[in-house]
Image 1 (cartoon, rainbow, N blue to C red):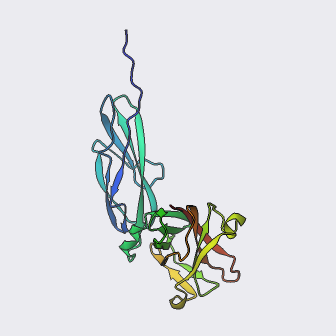
Image 2: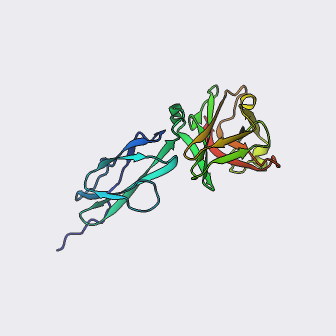
Image 3: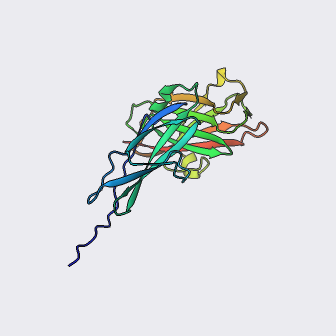
Amino acid sequence: MDSKVDETPPEARLVARPSCGPVPLETTLDASGSADRETHIMDYAWDFDGDGMEDTLTTESSLIYTYTEVGTLFAEVRVTNRDSLSGSAIVEIWALSVDADPSICSYPHRQSERIRGIEYTLGLNAGTFTHGDTLRFFYQIANERSGTVEFPLHWTCPADFYVFEGSCSTLNASECRKKWQYTDHVTCSNRPSTFVIAPGESEDFTTEWTPQITLSTGDFTAFALLYHGPANPSDSTIVWVGFQVD
């Protein structure tokens, strides 16, 4: 009787050390935690930037790669065993501008929106908070274009942060607007009404909030708005990220 062939694909695991920092960011991509039950892993196919294209193929489980472009990227490894079965794993890489403060890597709970070559990122210092904790916000505007980008802002306050009770991805959703908790006109007093970002660089905004009221437990949504235009204050880019209070 023929033995049954195990068609279980290998389990891929991937970590990046470090996964965040200013460019040039030299990162060790390590897939040594990958495992296969029956045979052994034959090769590792690497996609460094998440574009779906294989950049290199190795028999070693780790390698070093240097990221030179600013932005949020997703490195992927595909591991293949002797039976030609494969599994994949992805890790996020956050490549900051050369002059960025490395401490912003401590904002692991974040979400990005890429619009016409500009990446907008909103980060929180954690995904779950308890009453009395301080929420620290980070907002980054990274220029991934080949040319300089100018932001002629409508207001002298270039960014606002909002916190709403509930889960929603649209700032004007009625279920969120009825439960407004917090707003902050970020760095109003020391920012010009217009700023310029050179290629490969970023503009960073930070603020923090310690609630003076007792927040209910459950889901909340934080929004960051960048006002530009300059003619219409409603012309803004919005990024949101959810978090929880327990």
